[in-house]
Length: 137
Image (cartoon, rainbow, N blue to C red; front, side, top):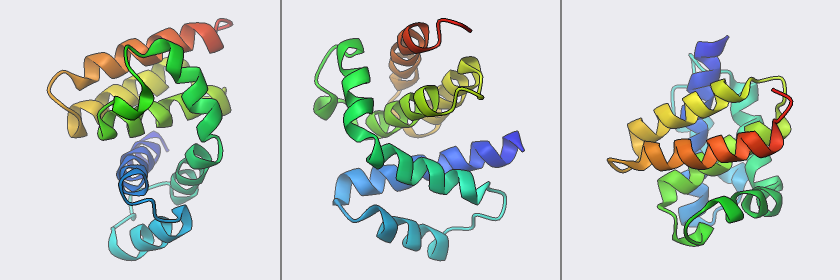
């Protein structure tokens, strides 16, 4: 299951990046991904949850991330912005997923897609957020 969830996150970051850059309707981005990408090893339901959940909760996610950033959310690298929003969504909307898993997955995505030191930025921001929203853990 976790491998399929990791694949869902990977494809979601790509789709969220496309959504951020093109301004396309998220349902259109989803249709394109399902038609053009091999999502065989992916938890497609979780992919859909992430892809639709981030835009649906965008104001809340950006408001939660804002105070933790050293710049405006708009000026964060677009890849890292997509990863931060995805991680924030999981921290806030999926309390059943341990925060360490959320952060680790986000860091791995940043290592794969982000700038050279981007994973350190993602790690720092999401770690601070986890301490605020998951203090019980």
